[in-house]
Length: 334
Image (cartoon, rainbow, N blue to C red; front, side):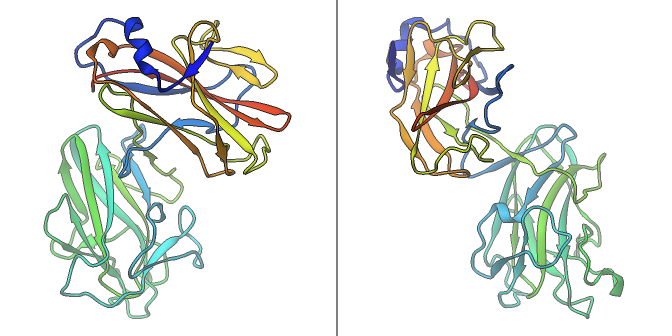
């Protein structure tokens, strides 16, 4: 029997015994036999976005992950940038006025220690001392001039070599475990910034081929809400945009044969279809890159801590059903 997903009060009697300080998790699982469209069901990123490190502790943040505004203009005419483009500061010079049109990047340091923060940048003024800097500050500290000035050989190329004018050295800081913030503000007209990199000093070097960082995503914690995103970002299933409905289903158990599922005409069902199955009402999917968001609210009830749920999405279009990846939830209190 299918029931509304938001009727979570029905789960209370089935919850596992509470455990103190149980970390909540949301883990993507794909089919063993019939893979779903890549990225078809994921947890929503926390807002505002927090970037997390890769296995080596590197955090690579694209400037264009933020929308351009004020004196920052998105461009992509000069090759050699990462991602889809870069920002150029087209506003006025602010040599004595830091903090104009701030770009803010939050990131999660998982292992405390010394880190170097590097900026992939470019300046094209024939004068190597002009149009070559911005303002930067870390964790609300003082604004510093961040400059890339290495003589005529540094003009017209992308570089990771911006340094603090006040010290003459790269931006290095002993960062504690947890969330930190780097802010960049406009200073010199014509300066171009492409990406921001936070690396343990044991790694040191950034490069233009490292993958972009992943955002920190929501987790199902009691007393809070959790959002899943259903999408077909690469249009792998070739479903009609604007004429496809998306649904989110949840069960108290995965399909028999975990971690594999049950093969159906629509794909591989990764949740158990026996017993209580909860679902959301359908919502219209508007096409690749426009995920449908579904939110479940968890009561602030300690008896829910430790409860596991298997969830999965479904696309329904005229004459077609397509199952998504699975998203396995462990409800926690942290």
